[in-house]
Length: 388
Ligand SMILES: Cc1cc2nc3c(=O)[nH]c(=O)nc-3n(C[C@H](O)[C@H](O)[C@H](O)COP(=O)(O)OP(=O)(O)OC[C@H]3O[C@@H](n4cnc5c(N)ncnc54)[C@H](O)[C@@H]3O)c2cc1C
Image (cartoon, rainbow, N blue to C red; front, side, top):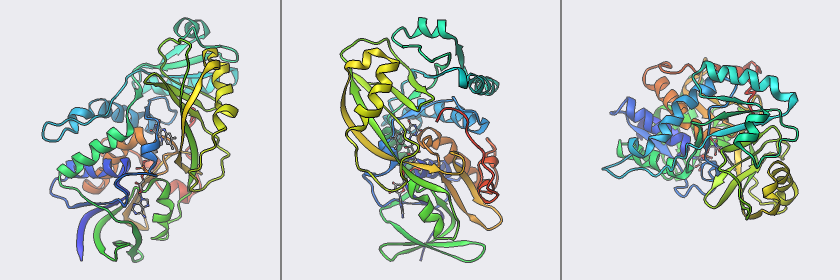
């Protein structure tokens, strides 16, 4: 039987970041990544909009961004292989959260936490918003927070960069599907692949995104992570608008400039959970366009050019990821999933955290204990209160 020190299930952005950091910390380790689809057709990573921000309420999320965003910004060089750079296309064009009266206190509290964690977060009252973003209709908006050092990138560029670099450092990608995990009461032993092959492993990492619940079920570990379909749209308007950051409001409207137009959407949290990739071509006209045209009248004349669907790996307990070992039960089985819409931007920090747990036996740079599985067992949510 083939043996690996670390077997990672799921080789998209989170699995590849984990493989990269394990090889960084332990170059001699034998790392195997099991990923059935090298085209990543249904992976959330390829369907993401690429936003990366520090505007969160939980210190862990802010600190994950404090590490991940500079990592992404310099990834073209860091992830270069034989002088060939990665192509991450980082745009440091900022984020803007806007809220009405009801959410001012929450935004103020979050802003305070962000500032305490070194984030360049600017508090903008209505006059400042009007001066900075003259195209915006301020009806119902009281204040905003602008984080000019946030931005967005090409998620596929980051994934391919991490994957290529992990392979260059010696990680092996196996184009197979995991169908079972052999284990006893205390340890996960080996991974069974659809081909019939069995790979023994010292550590097994579940990085299967919206499929993570199925993987954990193979060792009897319940995970409250469900697939939540979300649409993303590319749209254009003939009307001029000043350069915009990534704009988000409390109704979950979120969009940013992309090429000659804009990319964005409006998440429906009540969407039925499931592996549904069907596209509702009326959704933009019915839901997104009215919200856009209300907030920026220049979008009244906008045209939706393309709509696609993708899955959030939604943690139904609290919207935060589950990161870490199955402490007290199966210590060599780790989960890094459930990012609920933030997995692209937090993949570098989460991958580094898992690598530290495996290689060093503890968190060294950033303590993510509060995002561990214990809160799931205790049914004790640790909620993110930033706009999701
Ligand atoms: C429309 C949309 C917009 C988004 N926008 C953003 C954004 O702006 N910023 C942000 O940070 N995040 C965003 N996200 C969320 C982000 O895409 C995810 O959090 C992130 O991609 C999760 O990465 P992952 O590697 O965990 O999962 P995935 O990319 O889904 O990868 C999981 C992998 O596991 C593999 N797998 C599944 N089953 C098995 C098995 N049995 N054996 C082996 N492998 C298996 C799959 O093939 C897949 O490649 C968005 C998501 C969507 C849908």
